[in-house]
Length: 71
Image (cartoon, rainbow, N blue to C red; front, side, top):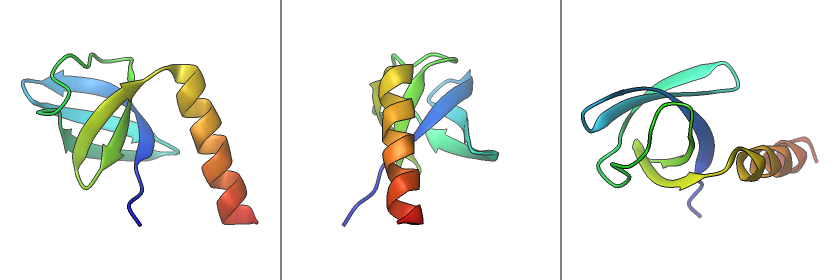
């Protein structure tokens, strides 16, 4: 099973970006979503941002992940 995690893009330099979520900060490739801008939420998988998403979608997804981990 593959898992993509919603993270907020906080910095962008070319096709590299830095994302944060839950106190974690990671460097990711933005090659697959070059349109992504700081402040937007992206789905991160294996070091790549693979899709942009709304803040509401990110919050809903993170809540479901927390529920699954707690359950």
